[in-house]
Length: 364
Length: 122
Image (cartoon, rainbow over all chains, first blue to last red; front, side):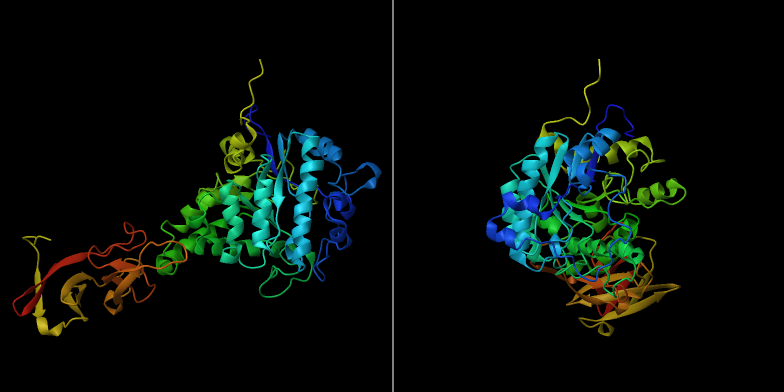
């Protein structure tokens, strides 16, 4: 689906996960293992029709996403993905109230990814998952993992406060040090210590919940702009996964409007918030809103010059997967080239980190 | 600013505009807000370029200059006019809004004290 046959195809949201929590046993102490469980989050609507694609069949009926070979064959080979950014399917991690447990799980998950996934296929790159409940520990974990060039971003599934809050700054400071983007992935925000998706009440069905999951990102983006995160940590980029895209013009224009009136509240920001966001914010595309005429979506994104803010993602193996062959149907070739390759190369510094070129050598 | 030869002189007794005050003078359909900031005079069109609010009702004061994140640095005391509606800040000297000054700019006029009068040239 790349516009240019010679360009690599990069998928920035692919989920790998444990067959069961026992997979972490080699990476946790006996004491940590005894208390290692993933709380379910209680009361939250999860997809009653299942989280995984029903057609992802693994040997022995293991959970989808837990077998590298199945992912390689069914996704990377099937669609010609040149790089798949693994984001561990531990979406509740950011909400676990037991901070020591969350910190241990994050550390063990990263070690497990580095030891059991990255060596399997050179097309795998990965996220450093951190527990934002303890920003100092998260920063230490970033510094511990960042020397591995195939760990290309810091990932969180929710935050215990607005992400601009200075409580969170040690995470950005560490990410900034290594030029690593910070990724927030949808899904954990309603759980445990995070404050929830709906400030005005909990949605009833999964139908509501799945849309409401997008709302925290808007708050977090506003907070990070206002609190000067990207002024203080100029290398920091925020990558949002699965929070929708179409709200971007509203947020940009509204931020600019408030800035004209209340700039005095945030004197450290010296450029228009919309320009600031264009530099520092990135969105993965899935699940892409799909009006009947795709041109309307393109026009909407074009209104705020967003073509360099978008990164292709499939969300394999989750149920709301976007097919690499169809997701960007109708997008102009130059947009596709940026979304499927160039923007990822830039934001993840792939050339520097991996020593690869975005353009494959021409076949002779 | 040099007085243009073809401009109109509007004047009023200086005692009508004490320090800290603002007086509106009218020229046909145009209103001009004249401010006396500790003896320094400024004259601007009495209409905010954003939504046409009467700038004469705005407050004159300082602003916060660009600063490190989490720190505050007050500055330009007496140079900033804050619109009474949306709080847009204008530099009294240039009429430019502190945000997007090319887009939001109030017309400014020459104003001076001439003996016992204040004269505005429009």
